[in-house]
Image (cartoon, rainbow, N blue to C red):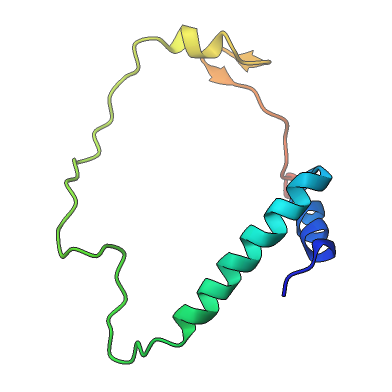
Length: 97
């Protein structure tokens, strides 16, 4: 059984601040989810091909096409810093010699 202390620990890792009522609620909900996962583990999936969709259909896709964006100035208006028509961001990689 899942404990409130474990829920507090997971909330801390996720940087979530929970009220006492939420801790109680989430403890029960997460325990129910884990119990269901344990129930699913009992299923024999030998020989079952992995899939991402229950129906054997192809999703409609479109080709990627590069198109100029008409409102570049509108997007750059929200930038905290820019150079010409580009966002200016802090350097995160050091230059090699």
